[in-house]
Length: 324
Image (tube, rainbow, N blue to C red):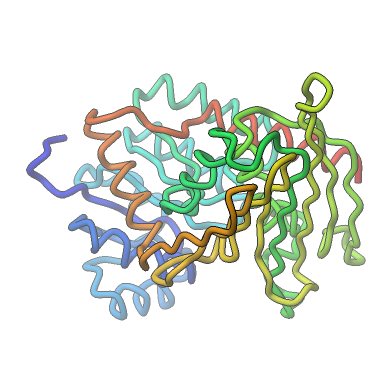
């Protein structure tokens, strides 16, 4: 790959997230979308025409193309492992939706395949690339709220269609996988270490898929350095996202921690020095994620969050699900 040539992408899956977020992100970065892969030829063709993509093909055909450098995988959760492995075997870099795998074992398979292929895999937690996430992490690490004692995060995303793939246990359905993973990931990012899973209580459909859940975690430490964390997530909840850190000397809160594309966002924090509100201009964290990943593909910088981080995330989700 050269710095002068745009990265050539293939899309695996004609999902809404690809249409609404990733295609605009690729184009904001000047990347080239070569083809989209879709199981349904008519749907794939309509997607390609609507978004001015030259070709719609099968997944297999997209992965095999020599004129594609990287693929974005926006399939249901059960499709992440097989198509990540197929893309790596074909010499492609992979940007894959979260959760990267259905368990830690799947992520370990991806790690082995990534090493063998000499390519990169990134779990697409786009919120991490928004400046507000790094600012919150830096504030907490710098002691602005004292010692963190309690973290609270939530993500409610109403989902009414029982036929939606996120309600299907056979392909990785569940609110913890789909939306609970976000506050869980931000807790790990802010604290800079891994928590212990203490409890996960879920309300489930008659097929055993969690549609609402509450988790309790603990970040170990000596005495006052210990912190607890509470997480709420669900498909049967009203839309809501929030994240806050309560410390020994103050509080910090993000009002829009995860759904933060192209809107002004705010970070509120207070301590003995008073109340503070930091405003962040609208930006596209998907485009920032793509820019970072493409730079790592070119060797311009290391990938900030690679598969070691994805494995730690998967291990934590495994531990929570085991407590359900």
